[in-house]
Length: 214
Image (cartoon, rainbow, N blue to C red; front, side, top):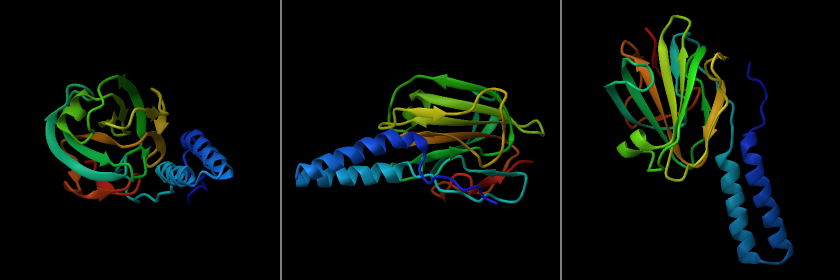
């Protein structure tokens, strides 16, 4: 059973309250054009920080998407930064209209969190994937598999939020953070993972099955 949840991430409250107050003030002062602009901005920010409930798969070996968005890349790479292994890498790009709350792809224990300041190139570019600011979460599953999921800032996104800490026991589908205003999440999976998605596919955090751990 899903636990009732406020449908807006609390990190959005300051932005929403400030814009709503500014909208009200402009309306009181009869500033029609400004009021209309601020109202649209308030609705946009409210939608951006929406946080809907998600129902995940039943299979315990299923990996779910850590983000809403579009799969822009699936490739086999040598990962020297996070897992130290040959992996299957999946990149999910979130535009400003996607839900931006991120979720745990599989259950396990957080081994470490790696944060690195960087640039703010477009998140769907190769340069953005390599040089942008990021926060990587590396977890080990109960079966000993090592998986990394990396929040990457984008051209507009300038704030990565990650609630995880080393040593945390995590459960698939639970919220672990968000990235403000357009971004990307990369997932590094063991080579033997059986993938269930393809490039260009739209996915939903905590719900869409990306593959199965073997």
